[in-house]
Structure formats: structure tokens, C-alpha cells
Image (cartoon, rainbow, N blue to C red; front, side):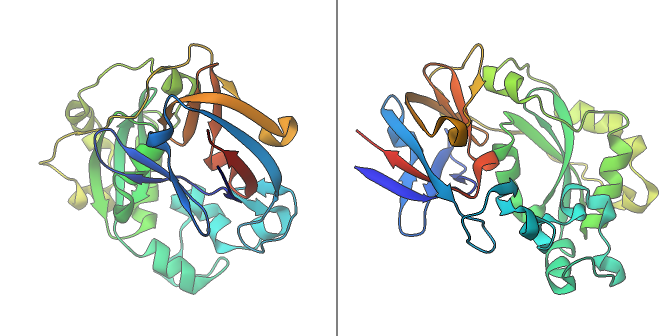
Length: 264
């Protein structure tokens, strides 16, 4: 049996453990059901998530031309503090930017390899934490637009990391932290514009991932270079597939690649 389709970020269901799905145009795979099974991944071609053409993927699932044109890849996506839709200023597509930026956003703390600060749309909680492989997370503020979330994150990352070490996350070399205490320690650094949105009475969210065995020395699979790979799936965490031989495959980093997946 085999499936073929263009890779996009895995869909998830917040259960214990989290359920993971690879969704293709006409089918989907529940990856939890493939644990302890040997699967083969084969690279077929590129397929830009915007234009659909077979052109090398540059970043975020887009070919180079599309990456510099589509609103989904504008600078404010990675740097929320650059958002301008609340001022009515267009960067690439004002209608898209208003729809995306002018909605409730959360500034949060998540613990995946260490405690880090991040930003996401409220509608993406807890999906964003799952995608980062965080085993615990907590909201700090809920603001009405992306700009306020961005300037809050910038202020807080002077006092807490804003990066995840993917190897540490995959090796599960983590320790539990009291995120309520972290939130209280960071409260005084929240900028004046966002102070009224501080969330006082909430608790940590804990997440459990479907992993049978964590790798000691994870090796990242380059499916374009290797063309084909076969291995036993032993876990899924963040947006990574984890195999028994310690190979790991980042689905998110391979968006826009068409693959064939052969199952036993």
C-alpha cells in the first residue's frame, strides 16, 4: 500500500497522546497507527504550495519567486512586531494581512528544549505548542492584534529565550519548569501597551507525544539528496518523524515536496 502527495504541516488532535495526521489532497494517514512499523519515503518532485509548479522549494513550501510575493511569507509572519495592518498599511496584501493580524493573539511560554517565549494566534492554541514539541506551556497575555503580541515578545526575549534547540527537544533532554512562576517573573517586563492584557489566573497545559523511543544522536534526513529512505517509525514529536535508527524527518521543513510513502 502506498500514499502520494505534497507534504504540508502535519495536522494534530490534542489528545493524550497527541494524534498526528499527514493530509494529502485525496487521503490522509494517521501516523500514530504506524508506530513500530517500517515505512519507505521516496522523493517524487517539488510542488510549490502557491503556484503548484515543479520548481525547487526555497522556504516555507514556496519556490523563490512565490516566497518573495505571497503574503503568507512576508516579514511580519516571522517578526510579528513588524505588523502594520492595525494602521491600515499594506505590505503585500492588506485584506489578507487584516484578516490574519487583526485577531486575538497569545504571547506564551513553552518548554520544549528550554523555556522560550513565543507568539501565536489564539485560534492556534495548543496547535502551536504541539508543533514546537513543547511538553508544557502557558499563556502570558492575550492581545487584540499581532503587533501588540510582537512588541511584547520583543520585550520579553531580552529576559528569556525565543529559540528551541531541535536536537534537545527530540532527545527529550528536558526538565519540568514552573511556568506560572516564570510568567510572574516576566510580568514587569511586559510593555505598557500590553499590560492590561496580562492573564493572571491560568495554569500550565501539559502535552504528551506518541514516542516509543527517543534518539540519542538524531540525524536529519535530506529526502531530496537521498531520494529514498526506509526505517521503522518509533515516534512523532513536534513536526518530526522519529525512526529507530535515530534518523529524524522534519515534515514542516519539507513542505512543498511531493513524496511517496509505502506501508507494509
